[in-house]
Length: 295
Image (cartoon, rainbow, N blue to C red; front, side):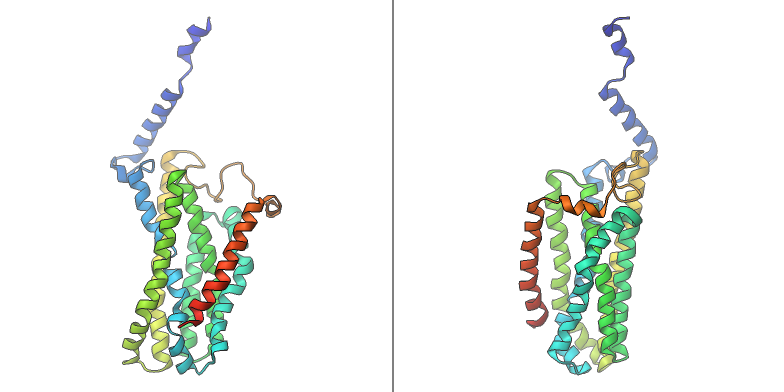
């Protein structure tokens, strides 16, 4: 049998793609809309919506102390140096835990469970922070900020991992910019709303009780972030089932099949990576102390 005779027996790439499309259509079932198909841009836009608001609550509550600096100092009777520790207790764990959080997402939790766990941690941290105000214990507020810091930046790592999994090539930079803009909108909304929220609550619950109630209400945005994490996990798992392969969008451990992540890989990061790290450090050390204490 010649090569020309056997050519028709070997399925072409087009035939294989058509067969895979048929499988996907069958798995979609009755929902044949573009919004239900993980391969379409319409479906990815739905994912993008929840992805952008995944860290909104974290950014909103991160700057709660900055928006209520004078109120915290007055009702808690703390000095400016003590107040600034609310940001320090958030930042110190993240000098290590961001790296550890990324490793846990890659090797232990996976992106779906990791995003849920870290979003739950920021809720716990914000609630403890509010409880510290309720009982007039500043050390408890500091502890709440520490817990919040454990989940806050690691949630941002999970957000970026989702972005890389769902969007490729030219879309990716736009997605990164949009999700950061929406997240920063959380910080802006915090500074615009929290003073008015506290003023309204303080009319009914004066003193530390009013401060605690205002901070507890702010925690509702963290709950919204956790709901976004749940929806993203459902959408991602559904996409994996429909596409019919282990690395459909994100595999169960958050990395592509066959790829092993090791802590020692950091030795092979290029110099450009470390230069970007230096740029980010220079930016953070300049801007965020001003935001935290400039009010």
